Amino acid sequence: MLLRQLTAAARSRAQLAQKLAEKEISEETATRILDRYEDLGLIDDAEYAAMYVRSRSASRKLARPALRRELAQKGIDPETAERALTQRTEEEEREDARALVRRRLRPERDLDDPAQREKALRRLVAMLARRGYAPGVAFEIVRTVMAEHGETGLEEPPGLA
Image (cartoon, rainbow, N blue to C red; front, side, top):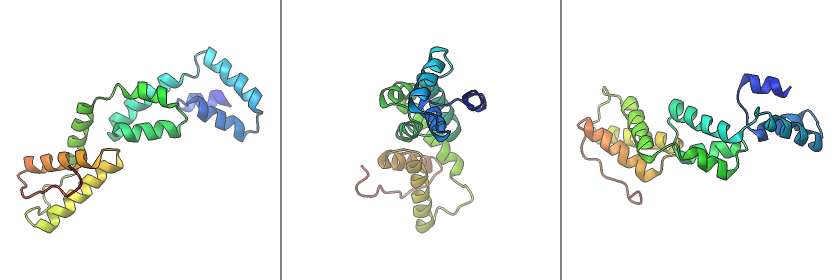
């Protein structure tokens, strides 16, 4: 059963322990099985976390806080998660955020209208926030990208500096 799980996709030790618990395998037996799989190199939470960070960074452009939350949900201990997150630099995150905003900023939208401009600004900042970017950073990036596209009049909302 565990080999099937590992063949389908990489899994953390905690995820496999959960599968064993669902099958009503005793905790003692599950621990022995998982320890043996670790000894054989079939389970490696550090490698899993590093792979997960690379994959989610590339596909979803998630910031470190969002990746940290997801790793915790997968049962990766905080120390292992932090080691995996060191491969993601702040500048890489900012560039990914800029690319996301550029892709989502619709050129056909009438951003000369202040109401439309504010609506676009709020939506883009919210999109980055959902991906784990701090509100101040998200606003700065959206404002910069909108300025690149010739939009003006964007004032930073209070409390985001």
